[in-house]
Length: 436
Image (cartoon, rainbow, N blue to C red; front, side, top):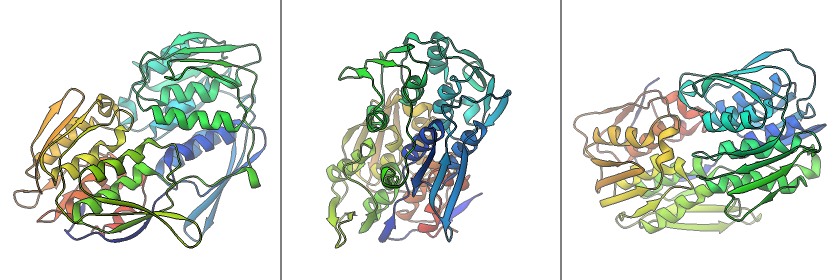
């Protein structure tokens, strides 16, 4: 569908949705565990539904709990390492790359063929490095040149493999599944290249919380994980609410940066491992006011606003590639050149986000220089679109949300295509902007 967003100052209080990365990890871990787990306040999105579909296909029983229209919890009865006897089956993971990569490794614990497919975008996203590593661990893999449809068949035999990680999800997949290999089976992983390191911190936080042994080195270039462990069910006092998503929070924060705000962001945890907290540092460097506040009940909220002009800057997004679309539209409102570097892996997301941002910003009168690993945005202090432009959203949720935010500061309304894709991670976001 197409949406039309009118310029306006964006102010108010926004309750940030739960983290997609945490939600999917908790769903898979709960499904791999033996017993009943409770996930409090998970992300309610298309990606979550894709993960639920995959976990149910593996035999987990999942109930969704609502308070009115709000998803407030999931109850998951795990299937004990997916070790039951299954006939060959088919899993459609929709648009969720995180689900695909993490579930591929979990499927390798089975001794039956499991086939994965997804939507048109997923069918273009290669899992070759992960599949090569799984093959080295004794798993049979059949794919369309690394893309879906992909068929997987265990068992997991272990060994030593080399796994370059243009996306950290490849490594997270092995870290979640390898401890469940049979006792005596050891998985060693050499990681010659790792992007998005904070997401590995997130995954390892779950291994530590569940008492799962592993060995690594400070730069995460080597891991040794013995088999024979189990994920533990978590319920009651051992369950915790899913933290809010800093990558989603980047978009209302960007709206505050572009239009002045103030915008108060709720549910964020400043102590969480999410690397996308870096966006707050970027906004401060570009001249925004970013302040944490503690409410009377002890909860923390974040207030973002701006009074002066936005400043240019140079930013390394290697650890946080999902920030590129939001960062690029904020940079369009700064004067001078803002350079985004060390983020070539932004090209292997739902779209080539480097090329797409250059292409679509040009329609708004903002020129960019495309780098192999980034983008230089030649900001003019605002947008200067000819007429009433139509921006192609390319079916990419972060592209759609980024240009929706940019439209708030535009001199004319902006129309954006494939707007429904925003629901992949942030249902309700367009309603915040009073899109029509």
